[in-house]
Length: 115
Image (cartoon, rainbow, N blue to C red; front, side, top):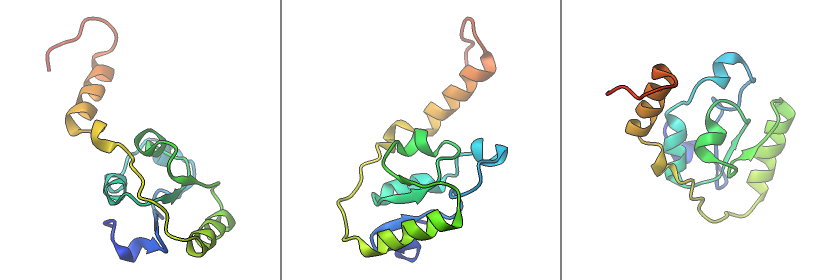
C-alpha cells in the first residue's frame, strides 16, 4: 500500500497495518511502507508498535489499540484543517545502516568482524 490520496483522510495518512495489537509479531517488524508514508510528509495515525517510534519518532498521532481510539482519531483528523508537512528525518534509516546494525547484533560484543 503506497502513500497516496486513497490512504488519506483529510490531510492525514492512515496506517491500518501498523495500527495493530502489541503482539510479538507486531513488536518485531518494520514494514517498508512506513518509509513511503514518511516520504509523503503527512501526519500518521498509528499505535506505538514495532519500529515505528524509532523510525518516525514522536510525530505520528499515537493511539491506544482499540477500535474506539482509531475511530476517534479518524474523526478528529477529518475535522482538522490541513496542517504543515511533517519532516520525519528517515534519511538516517538506510539499508546500509540497517544491515550494519544487524551485523553488530549478530557479531555480538567484542572486536568487530569484517562484513
